[in-house]
Image (tube, rainbow, N blue to C red; front, side, top):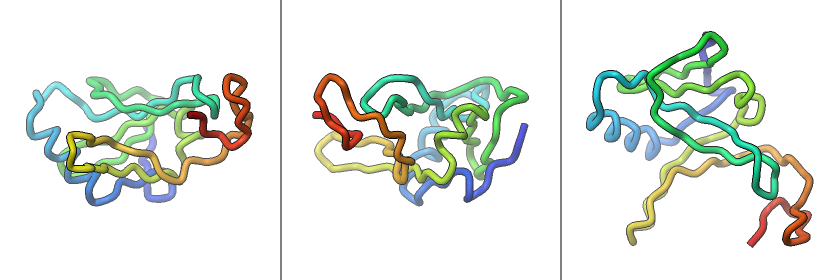
Length: 119
């Protein structure tokens, strides 16, 4: 297990507050929030988060006061330097967003876009 720092991954103040709120409402058996990458989408990689009850040997951990962010070393190669924010638009649309994602190229065969974003 490696210790992650600001160079690896950061959370905005809004994201940190929301994570603290979420962890105040869950059972003690949760070890942290796992940030993961899956193949798909125009950029070839999509990101998500889920609660996890395990921290593995190949995981990096960012330890905050009320919770831990867990990222496996394969996902970290895509996320290094990314900022996670929490955006609440006030209309019931609240979500975590990933800022500063590296350009992964490729475009999108289904829409023909080379910009990395499809509609």
